[in-house]
Image (tube, rainbow, N blue to C red; front, side, top):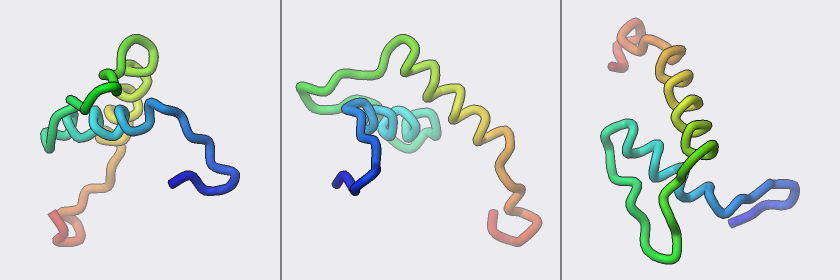
Length: 65
């Protein structure tokens, strides 16, 4: 679903699947005609994921790990 004012790119679904694979919770493989992320888009997703993991809150402080 695309909401008003929301920017939608065709690669958003592929990015979500790639995030899941990086987290060890799935596969980036999607059904045709979708293709896996490549090049700059793939590097951007991996960079964003790595930054998020490196700076996430330590949930063990709150007994939520």
